[in-house]
Length: 565
Ligand code: ATP
Ligand code: MG
Ligand code: MG
Image 1: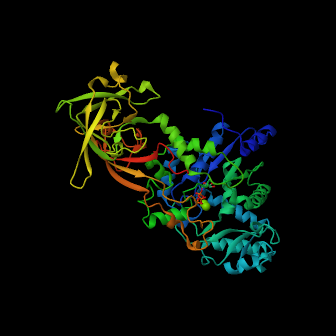
Image 2: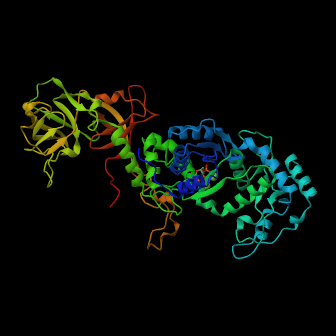
Image 3: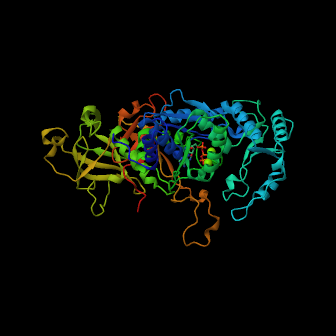
């Protein structure tokens, strides 16, 4: 594989290495909060953090940022571990839980109090908001800001001991109420919250705030470069202020970890916010968290998207400092590129129409051979039974051909791929005039792979499966979940469209379940085997609904992009 492209983060790391800042050490982390399933956006962050560590010979930590007891659950921890492994990354011994640092975080908070860097606030949340000011108006200092160290320490210890109600007091960093950066106007760093934590149970009734906890987590673990998305840019000054204060107090050695922001992934036709994903699941717009249409990684895996495809995508889109939209077709194309090499070819008839070869010996069948992969002859060939009754795609026959149609119509010849050339002689219809069978004669000398194969030149080349041998299975044809590139965004030039929600932009035909006729070899597919169904696209044997000997298939992506204009 090619060397990773340079980007502003790699440039910063190279600069650090040239200056000897970390003695060549590169340590990153992926810090999910275990409050939901990972999505495509997290895949970008995982590939970035683990990829950087890999290419610099460093380490990437998997850290559960579990400082928010209400929404966090073991189920999410397990699914995140599985998803990161699935993407092909390993954290070695570097698996951490922020909740394991609660004692140390508490000690940091007491130190901030004793060194005059923090105080207990007793204003209500509403009053605090009013005192904080706005972007254009400086904040005012709370009357509680001048509490003595002894009083602050006593109150904070009693907060911890459970003497106060939730919300009655809060611990704030003492920074600068006049700062133009709202995040520096004495941010809250500890709150009282009586909630059972998924790991620490009821040991604590106070919990650290994200802005306080995250820099400490990074410093405890010796992270060198702490990558986060652009929304956190305004929090960097506090990150630095806090770690500087704690390093001065001897809690951490210098140099201190550096926060670096990059643009989050925005994808057209996709929503990536947890709140919206929860609504889609709760309101049953999809069939659960692992619905192949959802942009979760569990959904992607069921869809047949591959880890290598995600890694290729992350490399291709790179990292930048400005928010942009990536077209979903870029991700789909990465999956096609990976699957084109990875997936063996098979034959499937999705919309079956019977084809009868009137001059083929009745009751007879024979083997044809089809290559498993046109680019990898070493994968060999497989037998495909051929007989006098075959399934073909309904769209491969037209009684009255349209201009440029080279497949089957009365009088025309076409090749049954890996089989024979046939000449169409007519069709059968039901009382309503629907075509029920296509009638053909085959040319016995034209079998593929024999010397006579090329003796007759034809333009059409169709796929087929033998009726007597076909494996009939459920196939789900998945398409984009949303029909609009920016779900929920008001349409340009439509003044009536104020109320539009992303729910209004759901694609009605994002899932179609059909019963297809597949070549018999597909009955042996194991869950998560990927295939290209010739002429149709890439499919995967569903990892949940398949049973031994009876796989069902999900369409991962069509062969070509049918969405771009
Ligand atoms: P969401 O905003 O969807 O609720 P989150 O940011 O709250 O996600 P976390 O579990 O806190 O989810 O995220 C873990 C890591 O993944 C963070 O470092 C975050 O920056 C990164 N991340 C989350 N969403 C994206 C995205 N769309 N693009 C890139 N990185 C992301
Ligand atoms: Mg978060
Ligand atoms: Mg978020």
